Image (cartoon, rainbow, N blue to C red; front, side):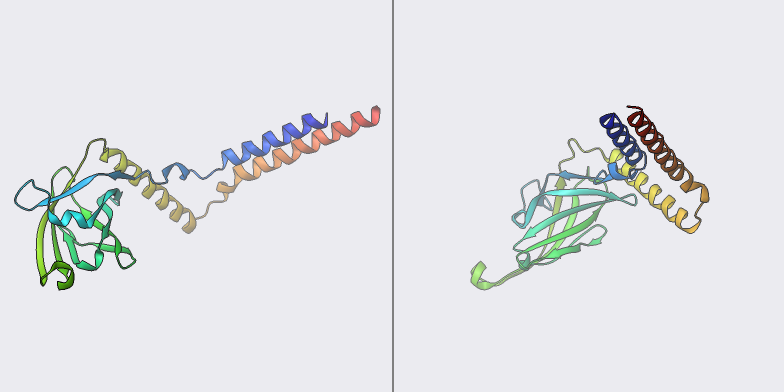
Length: 203
C-alpha cells in the first residue's frame, strides 16, 4: 500500500512539473546554425590571402529579422578593422591573438563584401605591411533553412513580448491553473493517506 501511495504522489508531482515547464525551453539556439564559409578575392573566385585570418565555421543567427554571422579571427592583432555592407563588426570577445566578432549580413546566398585594414609588423612580414583589403565572404548555404531560423526568431520575440505584457498587466486568472493543480494534488495525497491509515488500523 505504501508503495502504491509513493508511486501516485511521484506521478502527480511529475505531471505538475511537465504542465508548467517553461514553454520557450525548445527555442534555445533554435534561431542559429553553424555554417561553412570562405573568404575570396574581391575580383575573382580565388581564395584571398586574408582567409587565413578567419576561423571556421561561423554561426549564422537570425535576430529581430536580421541575419548575423559570428566568427573568430586568429592573429587578430594584425586585423585593425573589419566591416561589411551593414557596417563594422561588433567585438564579442578579444583575447589578444583571437577575437570573436559579429557581422550583420544580408542575403547569404550572395557573396558578402568585406573591407579590412591589415597591419603586419616588419619583423613578421619582412617589410612594412599596412594595407586596406577588399574581399568577399562566400557562405555555404547547403542545409541552411533561413525560413526556419526566422520562424524561431519570431516565435521567441513573440513570447518575450507576451512576457513583458504580462508583467505590465498581470492577470489574476494566470495563477488559477497552478493553484487548482496544487490543491488537487494536496487533496489527493490527503485522501490516500487517510485511506492508508484507515486500512492499517483495520488490520
